[in-house]
Every structure is written in C-alpha cells, then in structure tokens.
Length: 245
Length: 323
Image (cartoon, rainbow over all chains, first blue to last red; front, side):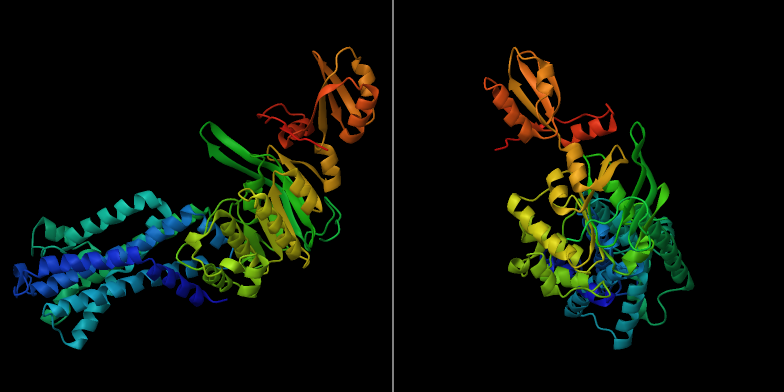
C-alpha cells in the first residue's frame, strides 16, 4: 500500500488540467505586471517601507496561493459530485492520508505560483539575499495552513456550481483586506481588521526586506487560531458529508 | 460459479457475510422514510447472491450499510467476521456503486494503478484491465470514454484489490445487451476464483442466470430468500390473455399449468404456473381462441402478490412473446 504513489497520481492529474493550471497561474502574473509594472521605480510603497515590485509580488503571491489552496476544495466538490468519494471510502485510504494528498497537491500548486511570481518580481528588479527569500517563502507557506483546511472544508460543504464564486469572492475579499492591492494603513479600522486575517500576514512577509522578523507574536497566534478553527470546520464538514460518527 | 450454499440462518457468520436486524430511515419532506425495516441476510463465503427487488425496495440502502457508507439505525453487519471498516481497511471488499463516474485527467491505466496503490495485495494492473475488458482503451483519458467503457473501468476499480467480497449495486443498468453479457462473463470468471459476490438488480433474468441464490426485497424488508429456481417460480408467474367468448371460466382452470382464470368481457385471463403447458392445452381445447397475449408479471406486481400489500404503485406488466 502506498499513499505516496496515490498522491503522485493526484498531483499528475492536477497539473494535467492545463486550462485550470494556466488560468490559476497566469492570472496573478498578468495582474502583477499590470499593477507593479508602472510602479516599478517606487521604493517605498504607500509608507510600507517596501518597494512596489516586492510589495505587489508578495501581494499577488498571497492572492495566487490562496486561490491554489482553495482550489483543492473545487477538486473535492467535483469528486463528490461524481461519487468518487464514496468509491474512495471503500478503499483502505484513511481520511488522514486522503487529506494529506489534498494538502500536498494544493501546496505544490502554491509553490509553482510562488516560483512564477518570484521570477516575475526579479524581472522587475526585486533583489534579496538568499536567506531573505527563504525566510519569506517559509512565512508564506505557514500563513497558508489555515487556507489548506478551509479548502477541504468548503469542498465538503459546497457543490461544484457554487464553489467557483465562493472561492473567487472569498479570495478577492481576503486579498483586498489583507493588502494585496495597496498597503494597509498603520492605524484605523482597516488596520484593526487586517490584523486578524491570515492574508494580511502573508502579505507582510514582504517585510523581510527591511530586516528582522516581519511577524510579531500576534501573527503566529492569528495563524494558529485560524488553523485550529478551520481544521475543526474541515473535520466536521468531512464527517457530516460522509455520515461518519 | 460455486454450488448453492445452505441458505438462511445457520450459516456461520464468521466465514461469510452477515447482516442482522438492519433498520434505516431517512428524513423526508413528509416525515421519516423507513428505507430498510429489519433486514437479515446471511451469505456464505464463495456464494453468489442476487439482491432482487423493485426500485425503492431498500436494496441500495442495505448495500450502503453493508459497505459502511451508511451507519444503520439499528442492527449489525459483519464481513468475514469483521466490521465493515476493518474489512475495507484490509482491502477485502470491492464495490461497484450504483451511481458514480470516474475522476478525470488520468489514463485508464493510470487510474487503475492509482487505485491499486491503495491496497495491500492488488491484482496486477494489466491483469485487471484484461479481466474487465478495458485493455483496448487503457491509454485513453477517463473523460474521453464512452458510457460502456466507463462501466468497464468502474468494474476494474472494483476488482483491482482482488477482493474477497465483491458488491455490485445494479451494475448493468446503463449497459447495452452486449456490454451486459461481457460484464457478467467477467464477474463469473472472478466469482469462480472462490470469491463472494452480492449484486443488486431488478432484472429477474440476471438473478436467475448469474446467482446461486436470490434474496427478494420489497418495502425495506426481505420477502423471500432461496435458490433462484424457487424464487423464479414464485415471481415468474405468467398471464395468458385471449379473446374467447362463450367458454365457462371453470373449464379453463382445469387446463394444465393454469392456476386461475377470470373473464373480462369477451376476453379471458389465465394466470399460469407453466404458461407453455397452458397455451398448448388452451389451443388444443379451444382452437377458436384468438388475440393471444402472454405477459410476464413485472417484479413489482409479483412483489405485491408476495407481500399481499396493496400500497405502492405497481408498474405495468412487461409484455413478452414466447416462441
């Protein structure tokens, strides 16, 4: 028995879906060049202390990777609609391994999206020491954990018809409030709301360029809380969907 | 196929499949719907059993409980002495569910390899493809298959674990005649390896041809359980209808193979245990009989007769012409 081999085929079929793959990869790239291109020489975007090419690079990484994580929900919803989940439930594949395959696949998609945007950023002059690139990537990947849980949860709650708008709307809102399109002010209502969103902390990963640690203790608490909450939601949704007690 | 095993209670539950006192109801728009109302079925290892019944009899609900896809409200299931989840974790169960399609963006061969990866001791991928008659299109993407090809792949998915118990829920519903024949050839071949097979169907012919034993369900209960020949005699009643005025009904009941007769205007309706003998006798005695029509009672009608239960909508009889 090899859950790894199973995960490999899961990846293969996700990456084979070219239309979906190119769209989820290409869209953030197009947006990036559209927004960051004209502002490529802005060194301190909106008082954030970060250059526009770097800020928007991480901003769109947040947008693109959140879409990638939630797209696992779309795949789950489709599999449910064709009865594939029932078929899987009469195999030895444990729910844990099933979730792992979904999460690994979503993270692979996210990594491809990150790689593509890093290249695009470099082409607009983003330059960081190797250690900073790694630190930034690490924070982004940690910030995505609650989104991985959310992807699984909505996959078991929504139908293939409704999940597209839900993912599109959800990601857009999280990106907007998290600061993908413009730096969140240092104080005020927007600032207060953003503090509680994982998307904000993903975008804040760009502050590695300023040296030090871009995430205060509060960031780790927010991510941990969302992870706990959404994991619970995912487990509940799965159990309710499959009628397991 | 294996020989007919003893039926009913008394078979060791440890060696085979046991479903005991199963109840399941669902919430419906107008109160609870009792889908399964006390089902007991024992299946010996190596036996091929048909679960026969009209739509809405509770066959699929029973199968879902057997597979652990649904938790019964009451009752218990054991598969070779184990709980369903345990038997499934060991790869002992393969199933072709009533509804369902395949996931896309993989070739047929890749899909079977993917599923094989989940089991401790699967059959070889090429062997399964061969067995299920899917070798010819093994390199096609799953989303490009015809309906018949999809069904073959679904049966390959059910067989890939080399299961001890194979469960098929109305597997041939979407198949044409040729596909049906090929499918059952495959399943026969597989059952001949000493496997236990349970299949649900509403085709009496399928139960008769491919099962050792048939369990009849209606309204969520088992209404009969026995060798297929017995079941066939029970539900296989045929009706002869003929235009035959001026003949006493009582005389007609004395014809060979006739159980009962009834007059409807100019026509008479004979219900027959042996319609072959009855038609010969009828024509010999009354050569003037015309507009002859022989119909097999539909399963629904047969079940209504068996259960002595007028509720539910009995579907019309299926006309058949016998030579």
